[in-house]
Length: 234
Image (cartoon, rainbow, N blue to C red):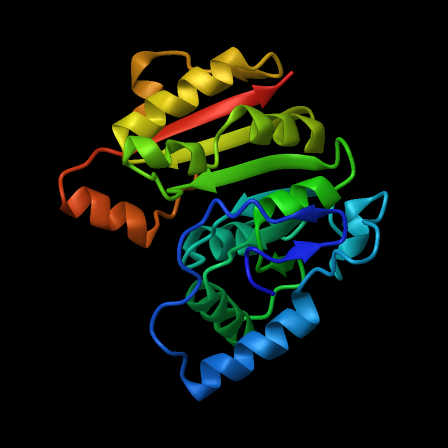
């Protein structure tokens, strides 16, 4: 299904850019098909009332990562926290292929995957069902005429607020100053979110256990300083 096609009830809003990069090798294509068949979420059926039922592992909570890219953080978190279920969203085919290939080599029973627009998934999830949402290094859409395509906006923050449990965390990381400021302004304007920064250095301090990502490594090589924001769902 293309990002502009319609699922029953609503069209994709497509906050992402291109869907494909370099052609996949045969092994990647097979891993992608097999991985999505086993781990992919089917939104044609209603979501379970208790998201923990989505996982083969016995998990105590569920977190969502939107746009996991190469999957470095998602794989690290899932391996480090086997008692937590993780849903990873990545519409970029090459990133999803990399993830499914990694899960073939190191199977994890606390991960589920979705390869379409994250807003479709957010609307499918039950209310107050997530313990956390991570959005790391999203497409910054740097040109002002494209800012409407930034994933952080009032409508999506409403979606986050609905899906998160009270006390749940929305974490955002970026190396683009305008997007960091944009996110701070939007979250501070939203009544459901509170920025928990104790001191000025907090937003430049990586999260505990942070493994880094390839996007972050590129930003550091190019002299850009990442920011790490955490917002609490009231």
